[in-house]
Image (cartoon, rainbow, N blue to C red; front, side):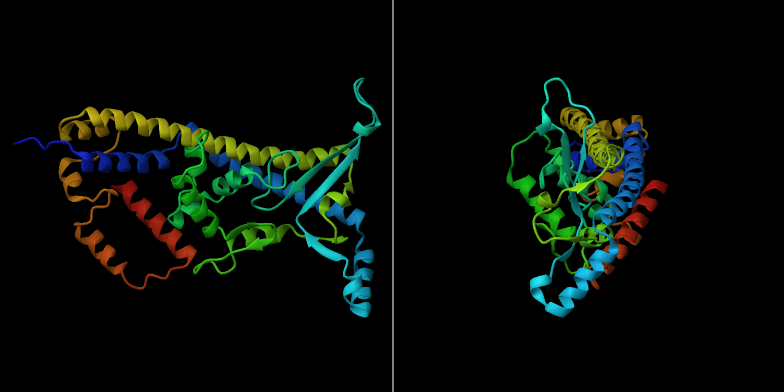
Length: 330
């Protein structure tokens, strides 16, 4: 039987099949990422429960209610109660270091509980906010056919059209406008994932000025709990980066090897050695995404998918999970 020669299409099919396998494979890197998601949920819960106590201690409910009632009586001039999800918390050091003076006694830091909230020290907005949002909402973004790994894949690289394109698509899918407390939504996400996430963390504050000018006092121990949230968010970014770095290295090794192969059978042998079942006949009849389009069941599913195309986010995620389940069986 004549050997089938390797070509670019076959290489892409094999590579895509491998990447799909690698993203589902239970590795130390993937497990570390999944554990970081569980840990940040706990950190969010603990930090916000404490934030409620600290903020209400600074702005007692009776004072907030009084201000609201005065606004109802006197109108806009007394509109001084607002909801916010970011706060400047501050504590005073008991002792100063030898190289410090009284100006160093007060320790303050900005804490934003929003999905895109910065993980950095005092920045209101930086790339860490997007890195966390994409890593934390990875499944939702995959369900919307976006690339949540774009920042990890492009880590250390200059801005470029490819990177910008996927960042814009991710932000749109998450309903993020890029402006504080301003949200977008798309056709199947009327509320907006970011707005829905942020809505859990708004508290009443008194004062209409910027949050830096209304620093809220707390104890050092309370401050450390808020810091633990930032550390947990930073850990999600780090663990996600490690996982994606691992997959990218595997992809590069696969590309190099596949480029050297002359025959399709060599690619099949490689996949077999990697523990992935695949045969030449399957590769010949699938498209470059790895979907066996001429299999009657899959072809019928593809044709049905060409109509009634408006789906909710939940439906898209459910379909993705069903497809992955079938692939794991195969």
